[in-house]
Image 1 (cartoon, rainbow over the protein chains, first blue to last red):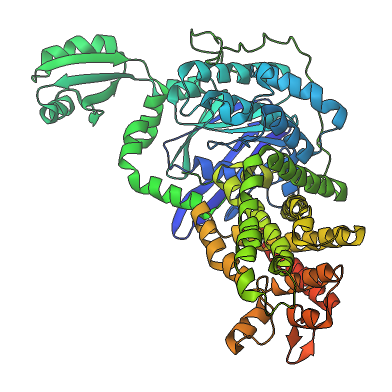
Image 2 (image 1 turned 180 degrees about the horizontal axis):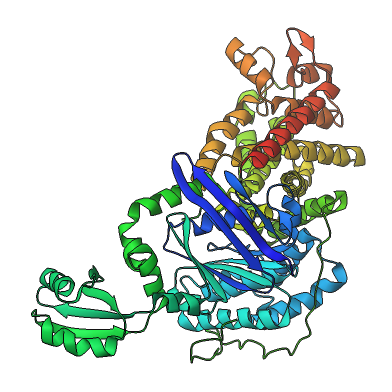
Length: 331
Length: 306
């Protein structure tokens, strides 16, 4: 089966700032592919290039078999898009929004009504089709956007942070739709997220940091690669504890989210030794199996939340970049 | 493929509407045809129709954009009548102002239509149109046609008021005024869309209206005859595009009135370029040509933005 998305050494610069520095990915048809990273890592810029909304500064990419630069219109008619920012016409009803979309894409008239019923029922908005979008809640609007993105049976559906800012129930529903879609339609889903727990649902994930892909595999394989368990301790003297851990056990520890953190194989057996030999009073300890957060940490040296907090500069630049692109910089 | 890892089931959504269970509805697969000339025409139609739907939904806008023209026509027209009676050769000032008012009502509505591009950008909908598999020029053209149609419909309301200013109805008057309004509205919308390509905020767009549209209206001769003006004003008047819409409109309305030669000469002298009287057809063509140029610039601007 041909690749749904094929990206080779894709690059994008805004002035001196390199937002995307040589990304290469192959996504198979039917995959749910997650694109992970802190805000400002270049996820949205990459997705914009794949959706033909931004011109790459270098490299090449094909989506649904079409080149994103050379066959822009062909790419566009085979992809569905759901952006972070809303793009609905609030003054129209849900049905009018979908009809307008179908007509803009040239969906055959006889198929518009049944397709609309199908996608609206999927997102649970069929009963509300005559309601004006302005009166919809944030969750309803996001669901309607997803329904609209599916109106023209796209081969690839791009979801840019589809669950950001939503309540847990709506987030669950959205994941429900994604699984349902995967079963019922021939569709590839390419999504960005910075929620690590959601990335677990993806077939494969790519972790992006500072414009580069630092890891790419199934969530299981990535976690296995980290191997070691993760131990977090709170102590009376963190810097002394870090020194002691290195001196006594030869392990490298760091401070993350206010606690001393390090990785060690067979954590359960290590904890008793830690208490006996550390020499610094320990107030609490927690042990965890590797998560995607640890995967992220092992590849970037920081957790995704720490990366976002310290990356104010990159974020500001990203925002600037979004404004440069005109499009939908509503912030 | 990884199995769903959490124990949480997909519950009913927050808004109470439960997602449909599994595959109760059959999957309908649709196909998007390749881009063609027909798909562009369809896109123009879609954008045009959206303007009409929104206009229909915004009844308040219909009323508010009528206020200004009516103020000029009845308050200014009646109020200044006493002062001007001597020089209008018996013609009611309201009758004189009427063609100008026909133009400005169209102008305000058309500018508001163009302003909706700025709204659409702020609310994100512009993006939905920009990523569709159609040319951006189709979206811009659809927008201009939409603005022109909406503004002309608004103009019809003012056309209905002709009897209050002693202008008799006739088919040629109604058709002629409507067509002129359509042309003017198209050009003004093109101007507005051209500006909206650059202006990202509604406040700035409103500022532009104050700075450009109001002066254009005052200078155009909608409220005064354009002969014997001071040099600077005559110059500004000749370069004001609206002048070339007001003048044919006035000729058209006056042609349906029974005016003395004197009144005609004073009130509707026609536009002159260095002493040469510009024919009405050329005036109309000027409006059309300017509209097309601005449409071209608007398309170019939307195409060059990413």
